[in-house]
Image (tube, rainbow, N blue to C red):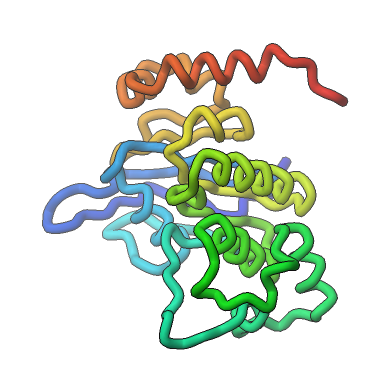
Amino acid sequence: MSEVLISANNVSLKHNTKSVLDNVSFDIKAGEFITLIGPNGAGKSSLIKILLGLIKPDSGSIKKSKNIRLGYTPQKFIPNEFIPISVIDFLKLNQKTSIDFLLKISKLTGIEVLLSSSLKDLSGGEMQRVLLARALLSKPNILILDEPAQNLDVNGQMHLYKLIQDIHQQQECAILMVSHDLHRVMKESTQVLCLYHHICCMGQPESILQDSSFNDLFADQMDELMATYEHHHNHCHES
């Protein structure tokens, strides 16, 4: 049985008496790929901050495995343009890692050619790959990614999601990813968690697609989502 890395137990949070999260409970197990979805304002970013220990819930608890090594990429990261720093120096900041391992991770994430570039000159897609590389330098067994493809064009999104899929398979780490791009990420997920202040539904993509709560929340995306998902699963896969 897979080790539970993070366990959320009846987590609730209010903001100015308004419920942000209401009795949220779920586990993240070793090797899982969980996609966290939900409308804007559903509480996704607040849940991520609670899992990371950045804010405390009003009630409930977060339990973490003693063996947890956590990597994180934020939804937005804007480097200070008045403090010039190269990509390689940014990667080294507060990191205890060998140059050989840094170069290995740079190759995996495709940023070797960017190492001498200034951080402030990177494109959105380049910055996301650099943030992923920095997260991987701690050799995490769980990666938390908060809408990593939010500001990328379609081509950039496809390349980034392929990279995240490769990282999941090659590094054998669990991933919790917040995303709005349902038709791009559903097919890679082992579990989908649908949040709207509370957990509306959670399960494998095939079962989530049949859930009435999911259909109600994402009615405007269902035609495209179903077509993409069925197309993907009509293909034969190499063993």
